[in-house]
Length: 630
Image 1 (cartoon, rainbow, N blue to C red):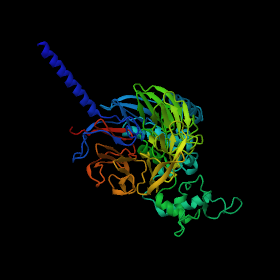
Image 2: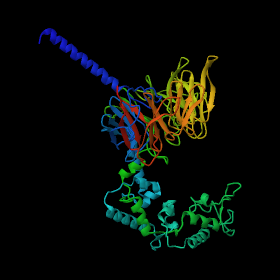
Image 3: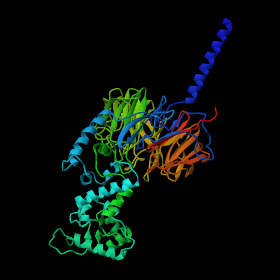
Image 4: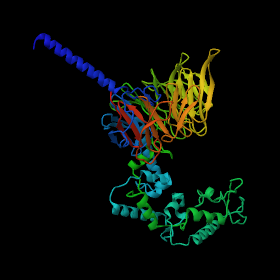
């Protein structure tokens, strides 16, 4: 090959490699490194994605894993890594996956959180083990942790025969401890303090029994046992044949009192007295055919059906699962989405543990707790915020009298300022940063207001209080220019406020308020002049500046959404998924499918990044290939 031809060859090859690299980078588009994407607005810059899904249902699945644990955290994606949070075997972890195939890269507890948990477990084992025999038996576990301990009593494995044998041994052991008179029947007096409302669940119905006679007998026995006075604290007075609310405490009717107390049709209120007739009616409706006693066979059968292959003995490992994360009746596990900046991950757990980790290894670089270190108050459903990084600062919302918001040095976790001018409680929204009328500020939605505070020193700039409710303010505010839209559910709605300058200060004036856009926690996205979000009656398209509703459609019911390449990716809390055009013309759906239920509402927000559509539902994470033609 001549020198001229050789030079031309290598120049051509270099040009091809350069173009190939550019194409590769273009197809990868932007990462999704934090809550609601690069700009925390639910908008992806991805292009060349599918405009409709197959008629058969879902797009092609690239991969699916069941390794992300219980919880509602969404995803942060950067440089081929996915980071999220979840309870693994009951213990809150930060989890990193390979975005190419979903393989696990690391899963860690922040080190101080792990060490604190170790200390707590040792103390709890000592407290629970009342007879100090080195083992926490079922009576001790029920007394110290209630029936909830069964959730973390791990199954030992085995077939159906093994489950029967394990259940039989467990029931016999409990009977030996509780059956004081040896009649092989547990009464509420013997087991009620431990079983509580589960006593009636274990007590099986007898279809052959005379239900009416049984209910009458039980009602009479209950009144005789618990009717200690005639509406007075003076126990010398004769029983009155009724049971007051106080008299039913620690009785089989304590939890059932409200349902059993017949309501007056006019006032719709009960009289706080249970007659024999009311008790009979309740028993016939809710405990029909039950005799109010638990036999050995009934307890064994219950264990086989509800807790197969669980031995009722609590080990240190199982106790770690019970204590190792945020617990709530609406679902256990962390809620907040991690934030990735450089090679660092910033993450906030359900109990307020705020940590900085190394993205490559998961090593803890620093840790603080929003309650312990900043006297914050954990909201009723747990800290749910996703940390905001702006320059050298990390912004978080501990809430409380020392300041609703705190700014930390992102390198060290040391406090830089606190928003002393606003001290309301934290709720569930995540903050955004915005430049409004030349002032760089943090916009956050707490218990009483959406507000702006100076990024420089945390001083309060303005606040707006019409869009909040006292139960749960969850949706991240939408900021455009000098306008801020905030919305909440529970019968409230959404309002747009205009920020202006008056007398050298910023002021907030309501432009409009609309009850239809009552967004719960699924978020709102703004595309052009219109915003899209779930409110009253389903999905709503509304003009941002005027509040005029362009259209409303049930779509996938209540849910969450993101937008990418002109399309709305819609995830309903009842497992429906849809694709629709982001247009004010009409609701135009171009694809729909359903995902399997994992026992809880689907609340983790979806993500679109690098040609993939991600859905996390509890421990399951699925990556769908939504790349179209370029």
